[in-house]
Image 1: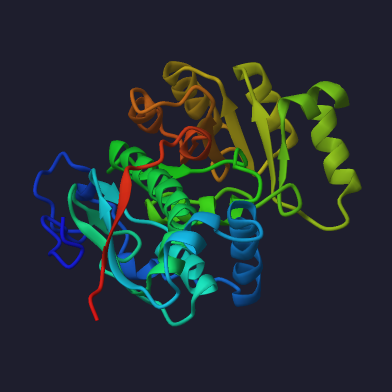
Image 2 (image 1 turned 180 degrees about the vertical axis):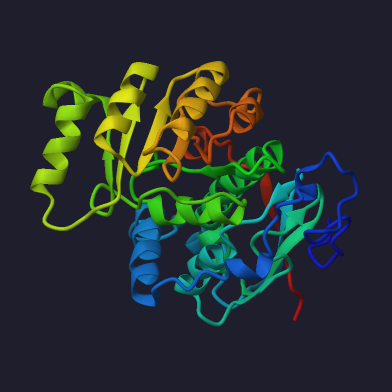
Length: 322
């Protein structure tokens, strides 16, 4: 394909060709929301580490095969239907190598790219395009894969009132990027890390000696009022947590039927009307709607980041004649 070619089939959100496709979600966000304002210094340092890992002291093959003055034009092409995510990160990779390279996003993050469509074009010296290709594509493929999978989950729970959340099951070093990709796909980010929210897990409950005891301990030791969420695995634990009072309950590894029973119990309890209810564990595209229809407010899905498949992208390049 000529990198200068058109973008066959690319379309924006709200312009689906098929109501069943990933771009057709009735809850799709406006792609303009996803122009992430990365901290410039942080992004520079992070991208530099990625390049150092791959390039090391230098791109040996490109240095020997390509003259510094050789120029090229290139296109990044989606080989399957995707939700684009990470365009600004890919751009940063190429500009780290050559700030004079022209990088033109054809599609912005959050937009559906059709199979065969051009999602970005580049033009400039050939060497930095060749050197940065793999790092840029790795990041773009990974983030677009997460956004695409997230969009499938968001579509699956449409009109139920439930929202899709990520977890902390991220690739070390990529958390900010991966959580961003979830938001691009229409999902929401759970806590950023261990430092910004109280989420009492089953292991905390086990060590502390039970649901009631761990909730009392957290409250007694908190220096200020905090939003507290606790993971529960049975209706008995739900009752115990409600008696103590809690801001949010995470129904862990329950079936949809168990979740529906728990929701009924929580909403009928004097302390449960305002309690946030979240389902987690064993969630898949096959059953996520059943959990949503059980009445939960949120569904957290570790698979969004730990099991998302990298989408198939290619960079096609040709020499630019003088």
